[in-house]
Length: 270
Length: 259
Image (cartoon, rainbow over all chains, first blue to last red; front, side, top):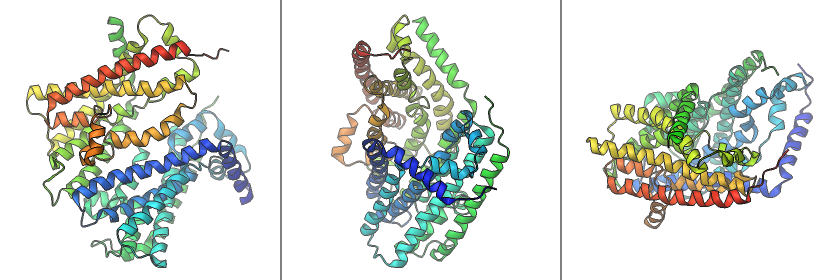
């Protein structure tokens, strides 16, 4: 492997941020639009939940805390990982750009991620955090250092897992070149599932998103602690300590899938 | 007329060739449909009716929406705008016949393929396993079919208007950045518009976004079906006039960068 100089990747990332910042109005508009999507989705869900009063014994504001944590995690993952989405990796492969990346004395993952940092998703991340603060206030959460730590744990773990999904998906795209939009089920669908209290789902969905693609574990279980809820049988709030190791294990598997994809990479010729 | 029908057929055939994308799309729709179904079952556990909708209405909304998703957010959403920016669009203006009708025929062929391969199977399978509310009479089914086709037509007409922003600015995507979240909410993709507060709902009900999803849902559940289809038709006429007007103005000022 190559001698690693983290400084190289930082400079690459800084360069890609500077490149987008050359059009400040454009960057601001894109960031605001990313935040607006979160606000609109939360507003719609809030309108619906208010009509019903509660879901699975949860108040609307409590559910919206889950939405906020999910959006914050997803936004953070997409700042670095959006470039790993099927359509973008597919383009890197088809244009032959990735052939050049492989010949460089740098880690391919580090190069790809650092070269295409997308700051607009900071808008989604911050809007998610703002949603958490707003909804927690409405739900009557008294913030303590422990609760803030649990919220941060949820955001970081969710971001880690989504980044793992993106890496695995990119590895898959190296082999198939075309990629598949079905990956969106895991990235956006997983966040959608984890935005409602997990006890409302049947056992199959709950198992899938608690243990296989553990976004439910990453968002819902720490949120139980934030909201001061004990949690349903089989998924108690005290499982929160498991969140970080499971997220790390998941991202490690994603990394293996990325490497397996590169090993099978044959390029598309020219 | 025959030429336009041939274009419609060609569009249908073209969309039919994307088999793998079809499987991925159906999987995505089925997944979100199952999750939304679970959410509505949980919401209606202690309530029978909310804002005039019962659980059967809500589930019908879910599966009509999943079925129509790729009709509204067509995979070729930006194709026309890109053709305008690159200058390829000029060929459309040079061909014989009416450019708006030609584009409409080809696009309708593609969306009808989506209706046949995604909307209808999605709804049919969901209706077999879930208590949906679908018309039981031939007349009712005919109205539903008409409503789905009109949704496809309106989706083209709105896409055309969005794409025509490219006549004025090469940065057409920026214009859409802020429009997208509003469309997403107002056309009923987040939650049924029936759950909106009254003033907002009245505003949305008179917008051209209703024909896309909410109108077919209302026709399917048999709430003033004939009147709803008539409303969709009225929007087709209005958007038709708007589209032609935009095309007439735009083609007069179209600048193609040669090379």
